[in-house]
Length: 110
Length: 112
Image 1 (cartoon, rainbow over the protein chains, first blue to last red):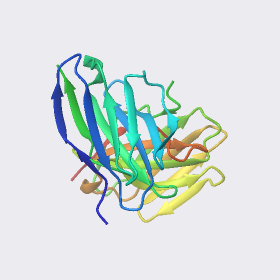
Image 2 (image 1 turned 90 degrees about the vertical axis):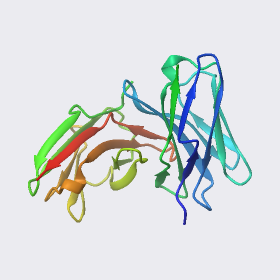
Image 3 (image 1 turned 180 degrees about the vertical axis):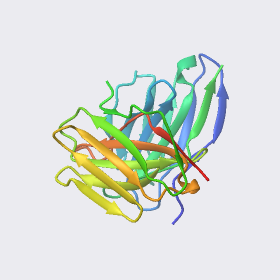
């Protein structure tokens, strides 16, 4: 099976803009979780989607949102970008207990 | 609030020797602990796990020990190999399967 894929891999945006990141889970996996990795805070949970419904949400402002489609693909959106949003954004899919991570999208906000 | 803590950001070990990575946690509700390994430009990959009702789990060169009373766990790699050089994350998981709590990671370097 193909692994978790994320697009784009790299992205540069300007403060105030918005951005949409995409994640395609492993075939058959219905759960997708998103994480933000920064040098200062480490890897932090953003939210989880299962069967198109958000199941859990981490402690992030409302500028961070997501959705999941009927084919389990997921997108996350960050509006009104701030410099502090520069990070590696990772998504993970699971079918059971183990989470499988994609390679991440490196977002740089200037 | 960092519920999983890895206090050593880096560890350097000679090839063939034992690597010991340590981790502390504060959340008593974690029912599973996992270790993930991450190479540059790749996502974290699962390495080994341990249930909170166990005190040891072994898989080849990798052994994880759990001391619940001290809220401490450790990952032992014996013998260490240069290919083990990576960032190792200690991870806690509670009843919410889709949410993992990561430590900040320890960069392990194994030199020949």
